[in-house]
Image (cartoon, rainbow, N blue to C red; front, top):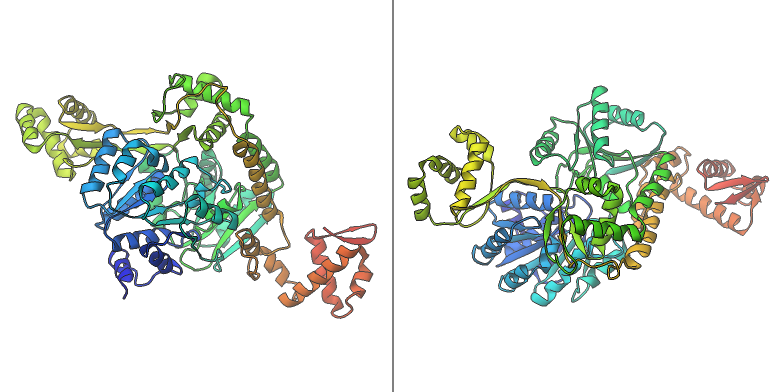
Length: 632
């Protein structure tokens, strides 16, 4: 058993790595800059956690997903591995304490949101840390060509100047060849090193169902395919509506979206993971970091904006390597809906500027001020105050983010946090002088450890129940302890945040670049067209289409998707089919032909030739006009 395998078994209980994992682990351990392309469910986190544990020092992990960051820190702590996180929404004191613990507390992992990398406090501390590895999750976010570009990721390359000898391990589940090369260049790899697992999922059956009644089709799938499932929709309201529809028809189903509280989301996840709920109807955030291997089917009720997004979400099915189904429900209305989404996603530049100036006024930021300031932000209050449409405002904020003026976080449900700011002797004096506070102080010390050295998440209701007080009693006591200087207490808060990465500018100096707007719109339209092409196609293997998109052009037909099954019914071998297709395409590219002339051009196997021609006509690859056949 290698040292890597011993670590894997000690902390994760696995005796062997999954395909490609060990090569990635070895490359990171040996200090080689590496980009690892691994499909969803391929075990990316192990690839940086194992080599970091095998070396002295701390691993920096950059990820944009704060909820996933918190989950991974919690999971590491449960394994007895010291880890913490620094992200937008924490107070300066919390960040200061966390970074001090990284310097002096023997921590192995520091998770960071990308916008934290450019702050002065982080730059000052990281230079003194013994960093053994920089892990970049969702690495496609650094590429302008990627489907989810984030300007804050550009700050990662600056770590090269602060930590010139520390290797970078970049990881992503979705990157085209163009994006993969761009990632390595933008992260300033000392030598390009791409480790790639095939995007092929042999156990995953891709299916597109053309239907004008998607809910009826969903019921058919739920009845025909046993096992747990995820149904993806685009809006929060739709999660509730579709879940109710499934329940009304006798299926165990629940909804999930980002507007729910942490407790509600955790409860729904746990019930689904433990098979108490069979089907979760969710927005696309569901599934990130949730390792449920036995998902038997994933249904998309609407088209995602790109094949990257679709591949990642569909890939949450069948992680146990057993057969699973990824079903996309498609209707003619989807094309209209996608065009409408493009119009909303790209508001006029003047509208983007209007949103920016209104936002600065709303947050009371004068021109020339506001850099690095963090603000709670209620989108709907803002839209109501300025009579703006929420979708337009959200799209405008995305553009301002891509050009580096601000950062908009997802809605965060931050629990209350607390740390003692005096030593035990001073605390004892307060307990003696204020006996009414003694119960709460003792309850805190019993329930939570490490309160004198770091912030801990606390639950006022839990404390109240333990000492038979009301949550408000506990809250008021904590406020009084704060006034006495005994604790630093941050009450629970649920809100998105706006972080201004630059000072406020006037209209003349606020620039929305061509690369950010026109070029990005062109790439967005191209991605949506490829997504529509996949959905509308009836002539090429689904798996081959996806693999070709990610640069794998020499793949074989899967033999099990809806297209392959229809071709299989022709009773024609793959070799024969390819031969016929090549011949027909060659003949008709030269000139349109009548059916008889086309059949006569290959006299052998005439019946099979006719089957292929009929199939091509039915699937829109051939069209008949004026008695002659044309290749479309």
